[in-house]
Image (cartoon, rainbow, N blue to C red; front, side, top):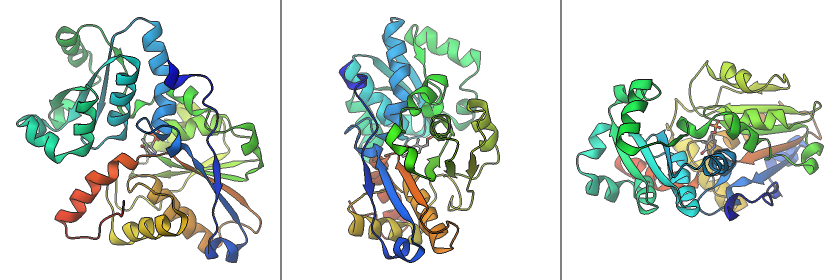
Length: 313
Ligand SMILES: *Cc1c(COP(=O)(O)O)cnc(C)c1O
């Protein structure tokens, strides 16, 4: 279990120099969770850790999980399964993708990567996907694949939260504000649980969703957090030229790549809030880079079709 050995401590914090930060007299560091592992990057590493340790411990040889065709969670589960010798089965949203698998794999970098790591796919309709947690559907999967360890969509469950509680380390107690992108809310919940009372955690949803605060409350009883809902850019996976330009300039200036679905939106929001004077002088901000860079290739194909500028890689 080398990949999830207990030696994986908190990742390094990199301090950012930028005129916007200087003008507001605030400090910003980025926690480079994206550098945790080449293929099982960022928060998906944290979320999978205790789940896959548990799957192994219980003697399972297969893992089933769910995701969209560009999902970071699908890519990470496939890669971690390969390393740990677990079969992985991905239930993917979009029946049409299964009609010509070779064509799908040629066109879709995420699924090609997951397939090369040995993941077996089952493509389901949008409607089928909505019923993916029903006992009928799961029984059907058991008939087909035998017994398996089930990881929910996006990987969020109690063991995932436990893994995300290891994102912050004792040296992070000096920050006032901790910022994190939010999809299902699992990662930010873990961060909230291991934060200090004097710290405020800001979650930046990458999608429109009033349900997220309720989700987070399922996993934490702490109250030192807030969702900043102004930076979803129209919804999950939606981007515009302004966001792409922000990501490209940030990479150019800071040498830190951001992904367009989560970390790009979160950091755009952090800089916008700093500009607007939301944070008092001398505030120390830590933004967690949760990874997700494998999704850039897929996003660039969409941008190309729309004749929009691409994300530089
Ligand atoms: C999945 C993902 C998130 C969202 O994590 P949740 O635990 O679902 O909120 C954030 N950032 C990146 C890069 C991700 O891949």
